[in-house]
Image (cartoon, rainbow, N blue to C red; front, side, top):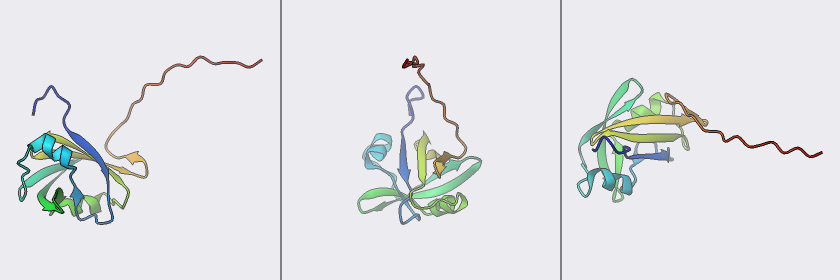
Length: 121
């Protein structure tokens, strides 16, 4: 990975089957090209925790499984909670969990444009 570029990432939501997480195919292609490491173990960092998760194929798409459910359980993630996956290397990822519209372990900033007040007299 080129350190001068923004690392690939994706935002998705926990589905009805939280034992795995589908990896978007465009993310996988951007990161690994046509050599998705099916069957390999990757590392996912969640705050201070580091988990080993396996990449497998399901319905023709790559998924995180075999260890993913531990992250889901420890963060008490439910259907429709969000996760942001960001690459830290080709086989290492960081995850931020969004629960009830709050991002754990992350902070957001926003620029607010000054808009002149208009007074009706």
